[in-house]
Length: 174
Image 1 (cartoon, rainbow, N blue to C red):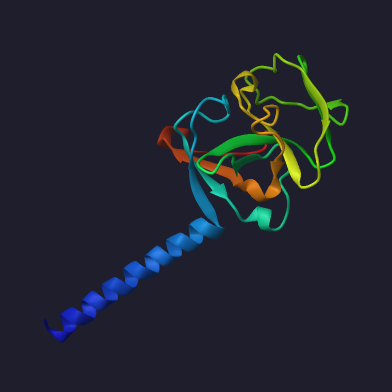
Image 2: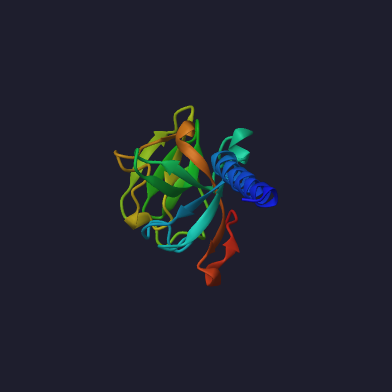
């Protein structure tokens, strides 16, 4: 093998190693791709959509009401839900809507109101209360297997849908 061929091969190997390291760093600290599975976030997010989840802002602040977050539900599974209330807030769900600290919140994004009442409960420190936008088809903080979500379990904020291409859009607070 000629010296130039060896040098060229070594340059390719270094480039590939650098690309892999950069990809791992980006995934670990900046953004991650998430696949929506199921209909719990309809009409906002649809089954099989792929989105980018930003990890950056939660290094500096806690999630805020209205944001859509991805969190570790079990060791094998992540969930995506909307933050409804944060630490110290009182949450009550009635057939006519969701109340936080006694005030009905405006939720233009929900598919339909929850059929079952819930609460009132106070969100403990270091946690958030989350719900799916498809209230009657969502395993969320109302469910005993989910409950309040500890901040450490939150992976990031959903920011952008990129697949399928026809659904490409930024995810905003609605």
